[in-house]
Amino acid sequence: MILHSLLIMLGLIAIAADMHHYRRMQREGASRNRRIFFIAWAALTDSLPIAAALAGIALRDNPTAYILWAMWMFWAWMVTVFPRICYFFFNALRRPKTGLVLGAAVAIVLVCGATEGRSSLRVEKTEICSDRLPAGFDGLRIVQLSDIHIGALLRPEKELRRLVDTVNALRPDLVIFTGDLVNIRSSELNGTSMPQLARFRAPVYSVTGNHDMGTYIEDTVAMPPAESLAQVIERQQQMGWHVLQDTTLFLRRGGDSITLSGISFDPALQLMRHASGLRSDKMEAAYRNVPDSVFNITAVHLPQLWDQITESGHGDLTLAGHTHSMQMKIRFFGWQWSPAVWMYSRWSGRYDRPGSTLYINDGIGSVGYPMRIGARPEITLITLRRCS
Image 1 (cartoon, rainbow, N blue to C red):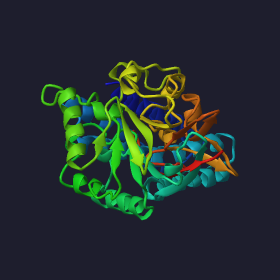
Image 2 (tube, rainbow, N blue to C red):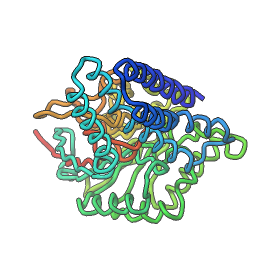
Image 3 (tube, rainbow, N blue to C red):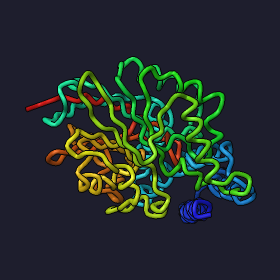
């Protein structure tokens, strides 16, 4: 319901901007035909988020098809309204040509974000060096994936096939997935998506994220959240994935061992999932009887739990997702910025402190709008190195 209210509010804001511009057209003596065309175009485009919201209110549930349609309706609204609001602003400053140029630039950025930016995979490579790493694991290749949000993919079979092929070409020793495999419900893991995700050649270890929990399902009578979550876990297991539910296992290579811990999403954190300073009650179970003298990799969805993980004496390497860089990122000679800085102290890429590294993957899929600007879908290749 909050999402529906937000969509209606955005539609009303656009209508207000259009009405203000229309009055300006009247004062400046715009022709009748030009004013009629503007009214028709504005009415059509301003209605998009409102129509999406009303359709959502009318439905008893939020099926995958509706969510996908609503996301693209929101994008269509953005690509038609944002450029003209840009034009309105500069036209009010008596710089209409500047408004036209910048409005066109905004439209191009939005179109590129929904095409190339949304679907073009990028591989980020980094090395983690630790004197705690056993010699047998020197050179271990880990691929991290996160936030696929299958239900938000436009062509799941094609996009997942390309994802798996790209990962397999990197020849990792293991793949770690850090949550949000589905977008809303377990049925997104179906006969189209599961065969593709079962093709990873390396062992896959995963944890659950907030979108895997089934808490975004509206018709909870037809599909209780707990049942959806159980199916998400079961279907991952059917694909050959190892779902780590607040547990730790030992990885062995030759005569050496390291530990891999998985912390599942804590439902108690659902309302606070974007807050800082989070604490989870699941840590004790995940690290029970795990010696802190052994090099540890921890997979978790929320990066905000890194402090608690390191306080426990674990997490030589912590892998997380969740933030998506809010699907918008500016990069400039190693410097990067995203609106995510307004919500998260750590939001993308690598963070180091003595004896511990956190890596936040930008994810594959999208939420809210089907677009990525400067934050293309990420595959992270991490190589572990023993150093003295």
